Length: 357
Image 1 (cartoon, helix red, strand yellow):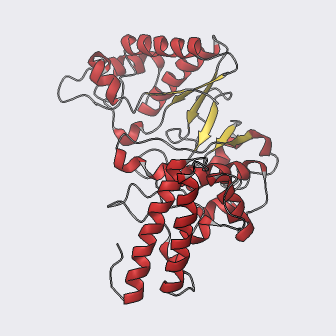
Image 2: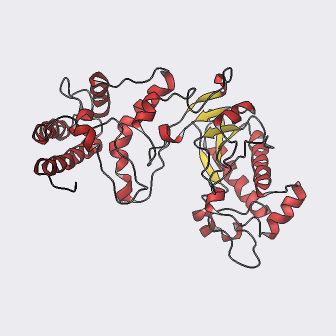
Image 3: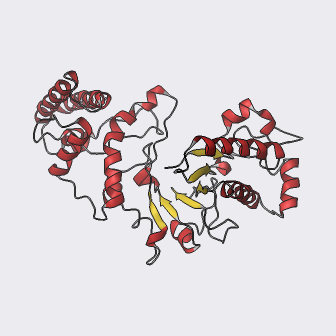
């Protein structure tokens, strides 16, 4: 585990409070989301911030995550900034990417002096070439950036390993519980299997981490209550078990007991009724999206058969929750809500109504 203070992007709140950390742009507006990384004020601010992180966390936390993602997507003012241009000339940086690397090297030296290892996201590092970064920086791989959001051509997890970096594998379809995680992908995923890990480089993949960034919007936050209690144990399984999950009733029953507690009725599989073990978390798409997998849940059952099973599951979960016999009462409530939505789906299916709720 390690604390993360994300710089230089994702800095909206910092720049609102400390506007002096914006770039110095003569004509036009400076970025409101990415710090100026050419000014002494920014370096002093960041050093003070990380000094506090080091002081507040015990020495067992020997890694500090400095973020480093999304600055190309969020936009920056480094090209137009007088301070950044001066710093680039001083460092010999010919591109904004090299300017960013110089900033990371500065943070690495600062943390190394405090016996902390630097960790950062991968997506803004052009690994198609050999980057000017210390090889003891721990890379958290989550994706190769989309065009316009960072380097793409020639970039891969494989290249980071070939360049000698250690990697934490948080591949987006396996790890990102916020719109991208895929049950089918996760069940067959392992940190040393996908993306490609060259033979002999397995030891450089140091594990993985599930990604669950909490949104501020209450309406979008509720999917954690239905997604995390199953996503966490499944992802944990993938970190220690190299064999793909074959699913099946036994897996669903075990997962149900993990999520809802030891008092669930024998043989009860909540995920059979919900249509999958990773419930939809597609918050980025239009609308709220479905809370459960209706097609998988209905399967080859008639809508009447499915409705009877949903009502029985609602009764079982509600009884556990109301008796204070669930581990996560919020999850029990979320599952009941999903099943009530599935009842609406089944009712419409039974009558042949075109749209689902």
